[in-house]
Length: 115
Length: 113
Image (tube, rainbow over all chains, first blue to last red):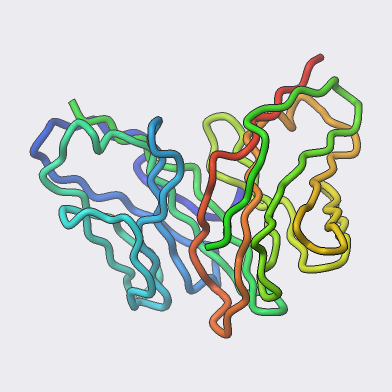
């Protein structure tokens, strides 16, 4: 158990709909990352928040947005869903270690199926 | 991000050592070498990281070439639970210290009972 929790575990919805994925980081971790894993794209970084502020953006679609709340949990909002959005969505949190690098701890993921 | 090259797949017998290679010829002096693994149906899991010297922890050992252009993750005694995709990732040092991970295709390790 990494200490990172994600809900829901599975989500099945229809095209055009909107969903919200939730992530609670490990206690004390200020950074939250979202990654998408699909069969044809592998693990792709979407977005990072640090202590409530957006820190970095990756290959995140305009239909997707995220936020990190004062209690440090994060939500990833996916709207106007398309079939191609079906994927595993992972959240990770991190702690900085000596020398400027860090270790990321991943949650169990949310499996999104768009029908 | 600097690029890493790993074999697509490897097989090993249970209870034998496994050496997973990674080439990173364009590594810069400020890049750390990180290894993560992803077990089936789970999120990625941190394994080990290093900069210049060889590193050991409870999960594995990391051997880094003297010129740092390659490294090897060593699982000393593979078990069936070690079957996973192993990712070698270069991460630059920053003052901030928390940066995204860039995953390649990794090495799919199969353990033969």
